[in-house]
Amino acid sequence: MAAPLELFCWKGDYGLPSVDVDCLTVLAYAKFAGAPLKVHKITNPWRSPTGTLPALKTMEEGSISQPSKIIIHLRKQKYNADYDLSAKEGADTLAFVSLLEEKLLPALIYTLWIDSKNYVDVTRCWYAENISFPLNFLLPNRIHGQQLEKLRLIREDPVLEPGEQLEKELYRDAFECMTLLSQRLGSQKFFFGDSPSSLDAYVFAHLAPLLKIKLPNGKLQQHLNSLNNLQQYCINILALYFPFDAREAPNRKIHVQPDSSDFDNEPHKRRNQILSVLFAVGAMLGYAILTGIVTIKRERPQLKNFSHDDGDEDDED
Image (cartoon, rainbow, N blue to C red):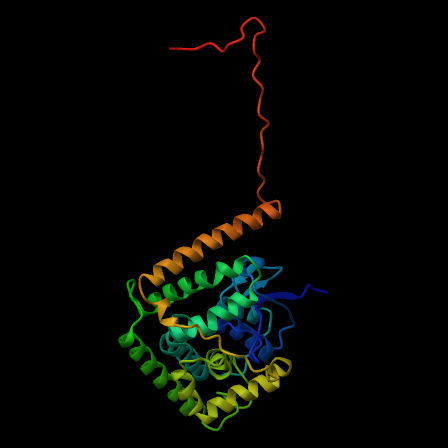
């Protein structure tokens, strides 16, 4: 019997099987296709075989990251959620996935990782509470930086900075994308009828966090909640394929900082960044010494041999 495929992904919370969009995509596709995965839900990407999440450990191709590549591998193993799609439906899938990645994903990154209120009060708090010490002082800010770079890459702007104008543009595109998805879904159970496909995995993964994670600044959530069919679509997928995770999570209190605007303003921003880095470096060094990764060699002081004939040391002028 072949060894089961092993999937490493971010753990779940808020009634979701994972808090990460890419991990949600793979988990949903695997459920839809009936792929028997051994799932490791973790909070340290460095524990995965690729150092990133999600990651699929296979016998044939080693370890694979990125949702699209993982889905391709599962299809090669005969776990194909798109088997019954027509050529037109296959083309529609590619078009809608591109639309999601160009129009909805940037706004999702912005609302979870860039919006200062949401990041400080919710996103950073969750990762800091769930990642083990001392990485919880390092990884949230590291992921924050990676998400900002990802946003710049999608927008093709290497010097893009957060601001009101950017937020308006991103949310406008996201609202249009969600409205279009709602119109395309209509009254159907899934996008191509009664059976879920890879498109459903991508759509669910991008919408479910907005549905379940309570955010202080919830403009995207408000628009999603106005689209009843998309809202019910996500609820149905959670109930059908992730019933254990979909159980209502206990009410979480939002961690409100005394003045989260300090996060964006100088000199507080620079001060906080420097203190975070110094603390993280100190914590990592302490952890490395305690676990034996780094050892400190102590040399015994050598005694000088003094001649019994001379009571004084030689002086050199």
